[in-house]
Length: 57
Image (cartoon, rainbow, N blue to C red; front, side):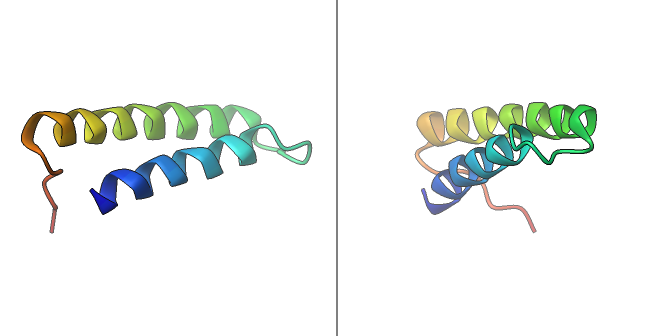
């Protein structure tokens, strides 16, 4: 469950970085945000289905 909360917080931080006025690499940030969004969505779905996200490593 801690991993899921961490993923949501990471997604929020990436969103703040993407919309900041000093974002020089806007297209790269969009790619990073898109991949982080789908990664977070996948982790949340795993948590809902199995009860806990699988730890890698």
